[in-house]
Amino acid sequence: MINFGFSYVGLIYLAMLFIPNIIWAKNKPEGYEEYAKNENRILLFLERAGEVLVSCLILITKDTNVRPGSWWIGWLIASFLCMVLYELYWLKYFRSKKTMADMYSSFAGFPVAGATLPVIAMFLLGIYASNLFIVISSLILGTGHIGIHLAHRSEAGYEPPKKTGTRVLVGMLQIVIAIPLIIVTATSIFYIAKRNYNYLSNFINPFKGVDEQTYVDINGMKQFITIRGKSKDNPVILYLHGGPLSPDSYVSYLFSNDLIDDYTFVCWDQRGCGRTYVANDDKSNATVSFEQALDDVDVLTDYLLDRFGQDKIIIIGHSYGSILGATYVYDHPEKVAAYIGVGQFVNDRLSTTSEYEDALAIAEAAGEDTTAMKEAYEKYLNDPSYENSNEVSNLAMQYHPYPDFSQVILGALESPYLGTDDLLWYTATMSEEEVMNLQGKLVDTCLNADLTAQTSYEVPVYFISGSDDWSCSHEVMIEYAEMIGADYILIPGGNHNVQGDHPHEFAADVKAYLKSLSL
Picture 1 (spheres, one colour):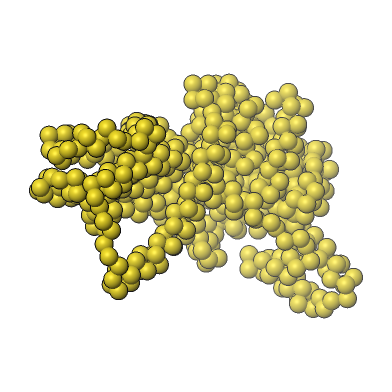
Picture 2 (picture 1 turned 30 degrees about the vertical axis):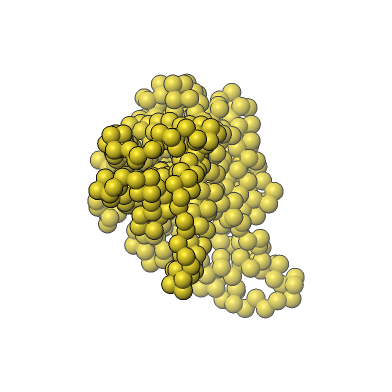
């Protein structure tokens, strides 16, 4: 995501560039004007164009400012070190005899340091800001600026140092160091390009719509939301993520890009997870509960209704979020225009039994030993705990299509909305023990919830599942849909995360259903 705004880092860099050059104007090397007459016009044009582009971009892009805790901060540090070396190069020049040779000398191992150091600094600053335009502008500047300096150095009679054993060894060492740096830099630029493309290809006019990542106060806690839509007058969709520890705001663009023309799409990192967790000092998650989550949904709903001048919103709930969404909709039909359950949860025992029985039938038809699976299921029936439920699912999973997470993983890497806090959150949930410590109460909610008691919704209800979803069994979903008279659809080949692995089909189904309701 490219965030426009004033950059104090950009201002500092420009000062570090211009001040030495202003002083240099009165300390030019003898004969410099004659050399300048011979400058290549193409290189001169590229130099001037690069200077203008870089100067403007680093001033108006606030992503170049210091972002404490950012995993990209190393690029900014490296960039600033280049600028410090640039200042030291000028100190060396001003203390020299100020000849052409001094002007185009090397410094700290950088050839023609007066040109290479600032160009490298701007290039690295562009990587830090994840801004392809700064990167490209620095390359344009480098082509012209470094090219002119190399030409002047040659005209000044520069002779490369003779090769010695020591120099050859140093050269080989530089190559060894340079190769991984080039690979890392090239990979970073590739993903920066993809992130910039994904942002700009779905650019939202801020005067008509909204493209915002922000924190709002919900029941006394600062909570993170992402809001995207091309018109502030469009109906509002509130998306409730699953898990309960799986906030996916940073990849929601995959399936919301097809919806933002007609709807304002809101993603929320719920209490105690994601960026909401990282942004708050209390890491105990003591206030997390299902009842609190319902109250948080209500406050957030009121906030969205008031902000966008709506009478009702649309709610989409995925997995655990479908328990939360369905329960909230059932209790507050006056605030909801429609409800869409994705990978709709109904009842854990029904779902686990459905998953087990289908896998057992496949295994027995193949003549395989099913002893372990049967024993795990009996153990689960006697003790329907999280661990025992997982054991049944892990054994049954061998007979069902394995979820394809490649599109979601790639989507995260290429996401213009992925931030350091998203990564920090996932480092906090690296084991099942940590998951239970953080949100064990909500895991218990999933084990004990039973939506079959909710039979008469007062709002339109629609379910979307993947045909291969056994985490929240699509067979149980269909039975529940038919019991309450809800519409539903199965996306062929889709798994539990159907909105991620089949985003376009998912969005098309959402849009078609809501249009059928004139929403």
